[in-house]
Image (cartoon, rainbow over all chains, first blue to last red; front, side, top):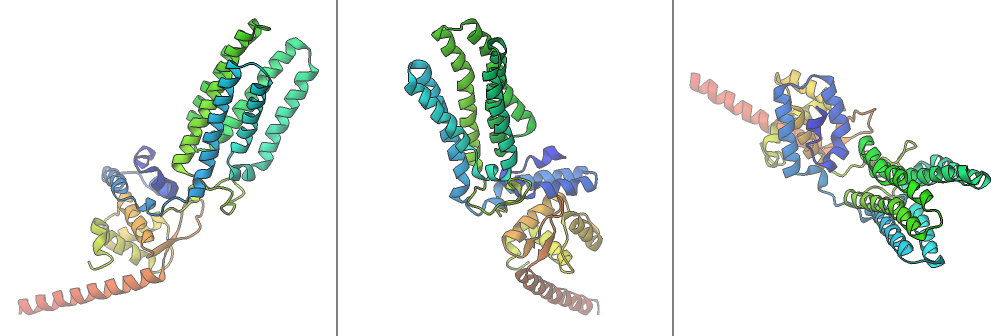
Length: 244
Length: 107
């Protein structure tokens, strides 16, 4: 039943999906009703009632911010691994700050406490890292990096309304797997600049690419921003937006 | 069907049913569906129901209220009530004419 509802255009579903699924759960879907639903989905594509009002440009701001962040991050990583020196390190630092600023504003507002708790955990990890002996510090460092990159990426993925399964694929594919792959290379080549650059490339670049992809998704779909009234205490109410 | 129902195509008749259903108070999708089924004797498909609801909402004939859990009630707007009254009056005249002609033909 839910699969048939997915035939409807995304913007139509943003507006009507929840109540339609609720209705379909009230009674078994007959063959006739299934065909009617398919016809309805076709009609919604041909005559998009839910797309008559153009999306306010402000709703594209989070996407622009996230895309710019991803591109800046990728550029910073590429420059850092191809050039040595403090300037490249500062560029990475700038990109890292942009990641935080790139988190859509209304999400920051709606989940302020959770985000504060997440950054508190990261700060604790950094403190523990500097306070532990070298052999354990490596493990803590990897954990802090995974927590930082994975945490921000997950928040952006939730904001871009990516489902749980895809969110995990994104997280594993662009944070966990690269870190697992690159950590032995980094440890094995301690002191070797070339190994260090390969590890940085493997860990950091997929993360930047993932941010850019999320930015494109947010840009295309749009989402309410801090400029709109705060929707509710339960988080950004993207699905409550009435586009019709 | 006359304007604005004429432009609704295959959704014109279901739209009229929905407006009649909402004429005695707000209802959510499932309540509209069962009410229309009781009135007409035939079920209103979910695709047709929401195709018509979207069109009516877009034309300002109905409006959505605050959702109750996942259910979102709809109610008739002033324009919707006026349109429904005009439509029913038109149909009433049509029915009267038909019955009169039928009665005349039988004689």
